[in-house]
Image (tube, rainbow, N blue to C red; front, side, top):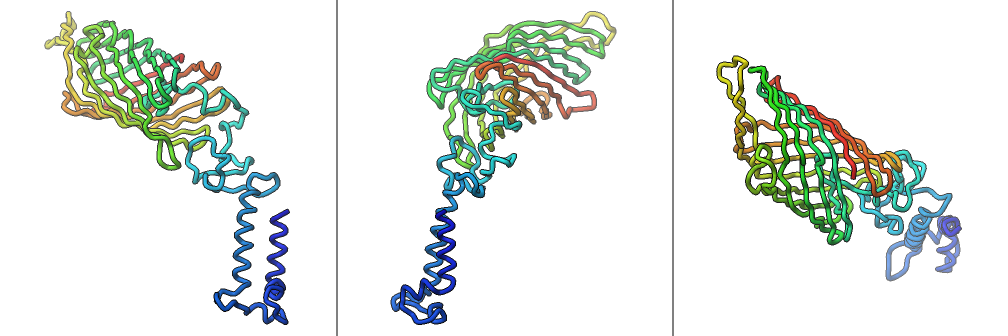
Length: 378
């Protein structure tokens, strides 16, 4: 109604009638050229500017009024509706559009209360890239899983099964948590050597790491949420799977929330590792008894990853990811590149089932390949 009234006044001004009323001019023709002594700006122009300003204010009010056009304006013009951090410059306020800022998930299913994508359980598994958020003050979260992995390289085929891949997270504030991680857990490995037609079986437990996660920057439009994860791998595993020394590592995570249902995050990390590997000693390749020797490779490993997470419906989410491992000072410094996909199913807002599958997409030679899959409960 106010907008209609403003338009009516503007039409009156356009005919010169309001300017005549203000100055007492005798005709509409005289009105269009009248100025004040102190200001050479035509009264008509200044009056139109005033009503343009008023109309702008009315249009901002109309954004949240049924029946009026919607805007793609950012947080500055929608302060009451920006209830979660995201990239404000991409806002769309038309509920009929797929890109609607308040859309709860891809299928647009109602997900209020604890089912909101901002409130359901947020885990570091099953993808390689950790989430940027922490669990929250006073929250204890347990994440577990199982993985199956096949790798072929340098004439060896390795089948590796690991469980429970446990991670314990305890939030002391809304920006800080302590972490205890049994990265692989119990490990069952079968190693085939094609040159000697021999195999061996090794099992044991991996080392445990202790560390923290600190979310030190919250997202602000295009500035991502930023988090540091620090850890120390402790020599607690069995001899075939332990580094037998303390191994430090650090990860820098950066996360953009684009919509309530879509997150894009990356991670850059470095670890100072001492890893065991198996050497088959049978120089004449006669197929007789094989001497298996566990040796250790000292190296620096860099990692880089990008992951895209999407909430499909109230109970189902998914991710797609690329990650790479780069080595320095190792016996083999060739990089490993991987991609993987996964699904999340939320039984309750705090109980998650997950599954993933992926593979290595490059190798040192044509003989190199790796495939992995797994599932988890958190």
